[in-house]
Image (cartoon, rainbow, N blue to C red; front, side, top):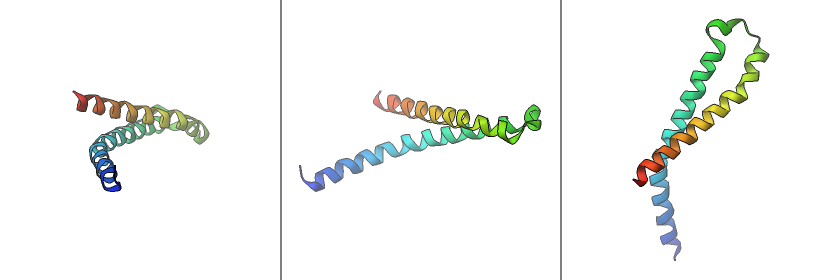
Length: 80
């Protein structure tokens, strides 16, 4: 297999994976944004910054999980 063939294959992989990754990232960012709003709004306004920052790892993890789940849904949908 020549370098040109390999470049073509990776170009096709990049082209096909871009929408899947984009959708997943958008979902993850939306999840993080919503969770951050929830952490600092409403009843929680009187919380200390340390308490809010303590929630940050959980918020980021939930965003990463949401992004991964969305990417897996897209991959499964594309295979059908």
